Image 1 (cartoon, rainbow, N blue to C red):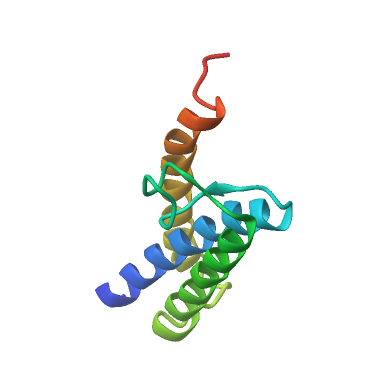
Image 2 (cartoon, rainbow, N blue to C red):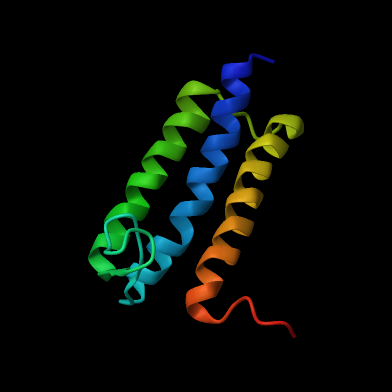
Length: 107
């Protein structure tokens, strides 16, 4: 497989999974961290900003996954690469945002 396609799959999955908390928080009308907040990535942005940022992430994910890499969901190895990008992004987000929302406390 082409290394550019591999990178597009990985980062496409990352952008796809990064869109989820932003769109979800925005649709629920809740503020959430975004790159546009102060301090960057730690302060809260409005629900509207998060919906918009989430949809930008979805558009980038679509472009990387569909247009650049030509992802076919029947090709499990390629889906795994995209899933790995999503998993690593999700784990990073859980650790980073858990500091602000109590998600890093031991059970």
